[in-house]
Image (cartoon, rainbow, N blue to C red):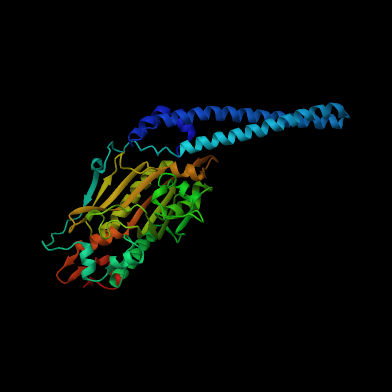
Length: 423
């Protein structure tokens, strides 16, 4: 959530910056500032009234001590009137704060100055590309046919048990999943991340704090009786570990990682772009999260980018890095890199990771702050990234490594799978 003080001091800058996200904020910001004027005036009147009430109480106390009981009783009537005024002002202030907050949560995060302009994914910039695209035979199979051929993922069984987008992994397919999860977690731990095993459901406050609510209300599975949400990513519970906390600067950066199942109601429609593992309602992912100071957050973003590219190189997958344009960047992000691997059988790039800097957008919502060496309390910056999401990694591994005798397993994974070939 954007800070009201920043909007107040930089109204036109905010309006112009949000245009890069193709978001017309002018009317909303005008209303926010109008409410803010009334809210601050009401707050001042309340503070003045409380001060008058406190001063009057002291005066009454002094009168009672000196035997001026009648005069003290007269002032007590004024005190009763002031109490009524205080209550009215507090109620008015609560309504104004509620209205202002309901408007503030509608505003996306401001994109970083370096974010390119653009409206669609076609406007994203290719920042880097590495690896050689395999030269497969003309009869190379897409992963949904390979999984059937080698009996490692059963899409039909998942549809029968639950519905489309909920595959069943079996045999070497299940072991490959487990191997990738353990490999990703071990890599993160070696890079200094602390592992967590978080809940798979969060409350409304947690979903609000990281920006899923109200922006993605319809995209999350919602257990309405308990008002709990199945997590779309481990970012949500992990970042909320630090909600309503004041850290010490010496504790930063905080590096956290977690494996979790992830749940997305909106997984796409029909066609090859959503077939097989390309888009799922439930999938596995290892997430990395960092909390750091504003001065170091963009250095941290680059560090996280290099970390993920290192994993992709170990998996021997051709990949590219996209710097997302304003129109493709998420609601809460200030800057995002997308990592894509090339799926040779499908002849297209598949997104496997997003790494984002949210600056103070999440920390302002969740009141995540730190105290610097001089004792000043400041909002921290939060960042997160997929390291990595499994479905499209598996799709690319299966398709790119197929050969006459089966599917080759990358060397880095063999200690985790216990086999070097699926046949």
